[in-house]
Length: 310
Image 1 (cartoon, one colour):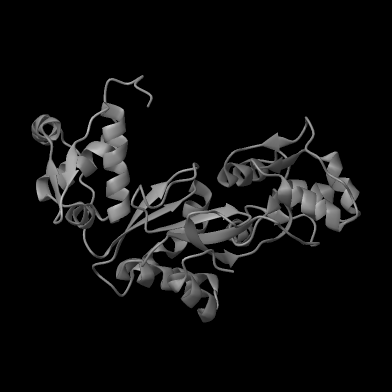
Image 2: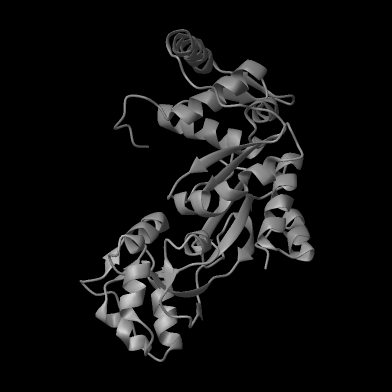
């Protein structure tokens, strides 16, 4: 275990304190809106970091070891100090709170325009967004649902494909007019803009019988929001990824350069942890599926399956 920090992993302390206070991993899981397995792994991680056992397992729940009792006292003192001296934001909790993870571009371009509709009809439903580029561990981090962009086949989670992308080139209205109509090769005269995955451009040129590999004059940005911003600023030609880019095309911030389309090998997936989802998560997944036009049969398989859905 890496002890480069003098502090143990703070998320493990929260799981430890809840389990020690309740005397049960199951009760701690319910209090923190996590699974029993997530609490168990967090406690094991803390025990490994400290190099000592903190609990003894009993027929009904768990009991603190002497080392666990000492750590519990210090942990409660530290938590009380933080609560007394910090003007901190408290995360809402409850049966109708759904923790949702997505990358920034999906949140701003697809989720935010639909967020009010997704919460409408249930005054108790609250969606807590975790916006992150990294691939999160849904179970250990207490994430109920996530939307990710990829090629499918993610292990340790249940997934269903929300929608595919039929991509086409876009640019600022001024640049699109200057490029005009013509053969697809004409686009290679311009800087091409893409995010961390240029698969959309490769697929589009391949559909036109051309080979494309990123070049020094092309521009790469890690987030698709920046791709669209760069294209709107006239820095080159980007690949429209419907429905993320459709709003900016409708607003005439971006214009279609070439109407020929190609299927992006990367698509969008709705993920959840293994096991039975909570009722609030199931309700939100149903609403997201309706927004994406997902067939009911595939939604039902997603909510019941323990393996990756089709």
